[in-house]
Image (cartoon, rainbow, N blue to C red):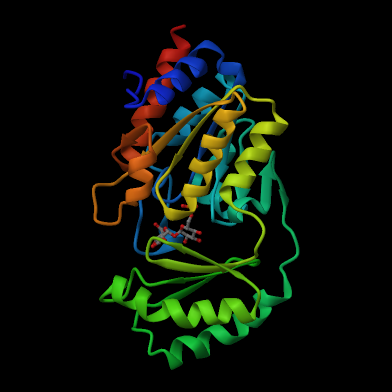
Length: 276
Ligand SMILES: O=P(O)(O)OC[C@H]1O[C@H](O[C@H]2O[C@H](CO)[C@@H](O)[C@H](O)[C@H]2O)[C@H](O)[C@@H](O)[C@@H]1O
């Protein structure tokens, strides 16, 4: 398997930096849509075959591997089988939670989460949310999914305004994603989480792969880190469906074919680093 071919000069320079100084490189990956294929039921998501083995191969070759996800950190560890990857760090709930070496750190939820939890069922009933709409309770955040409704896009549009109104009253942020709207605490996103992580490790380069709107903040963080001399390679996992996030595709240095393409990229990177 060969290395990826970035379509931008900055991306090519970042890949050169990773290859030249792998022990200064952070590999950061989103979970759903990047490591794990998108599936109708969120609790059925699992890592793409081979991905965990490649991460385990890469771990001793790099400064660090980190998963930056909207999932609760322990859920990503379980669904991804990530205990198989030595030294991996999982930043869950857009950076609010941290799992490392079996230890999970979870903050207290803001009071608005309890309010939203209490009101959501009634809100969905009042809005006439179609059969298949579901609530994912993530302890410090709540996600409303429409993928399993007959018309997921229309259902999402129907719920957008009432959910925004509830979020405002509950003093929560609205996080839109692929057939999902989340109500989550303000004050942290994948960009801030990634910047802190990379800065704490004094990394010289970072590769970030993501697929969804929440990953735009991580792409923006890489662009800012570049200005501070940290080389950044932005990878978009685009699964060839109408759900691809255009802004992510446009800003990427490399576009791969969904989680299968991410797996190939990891294999290429591991092969190249082991052959050095
Ligand atoms: O940051 P991520 O790792 O990408 O997590 C974002 C949200 O992903 C999950 O929902 C998405 O994946 C589901 C399983 O494939 C799919 O059914 C759903 O339509 C997608 O939106 C997850 O359920 C959320 O909690 C995450 O925040």
